[in-house]
Length: 259
Image (cartoon, rainbow, N blue to C red; front, side, top):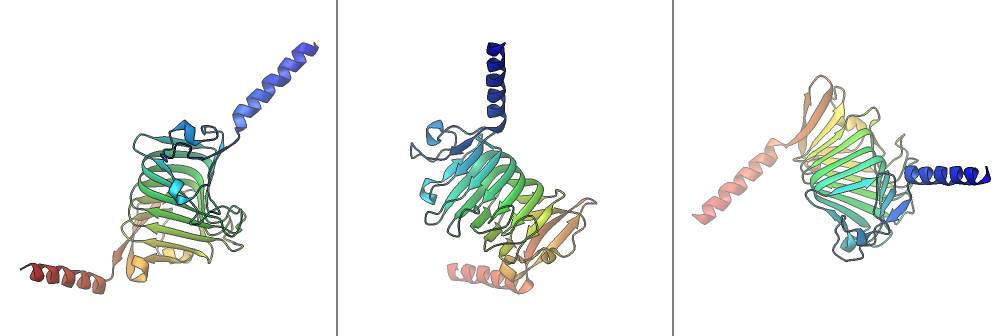
């Protein structure tokens, strides 16, 4: 009976361990910056783990075409100069729960996700701070690719948009940021989101995205275009006519110089 009880306890411990995972840390042991190289991790991350990218930008973690990165919670944050960085040149990141960029671990913590291509799937995406707000600086720079947020996107604030000093910056220079879940977009006064060639998709019929906070088009010199499909609104941006004229004059000037 005693042996059976001990075996039962050990099995239960193994099940709990495999279900909840542990904390795994990015170390870039080989110096090649490749996510899929197991030597670069304290333990190779699984879908059950808290995955932490915590080194400086020179030691960024990179995913390329065909790569898959897994996490239960993911933290991209460091107090090193410039903070830490996760770069997607392709591939897929699947995060079951919180993806926190610029963690609430101190005012000097910063993190950046650079999307050149690929896909990120997560339940929550917090850019700067954490669920309760707090400090830390987070950056999301999208040149291409797709980010799918199934519940809530927060920028520089917690679930209610309150920040304790955190800063969040989102630049949509390409690709698509889908935040169509029930939590929607929540932004504090320290957050900003600028759209140029990218697209932001929100649930419902949105006619004025600036009601969410500091949302701009072409750094404030453009205007928004809203396309409601009956369920979600895709928000893109166009430059103002004056800006278009300046671009046109610039092209003509270059052509005349060449002639």
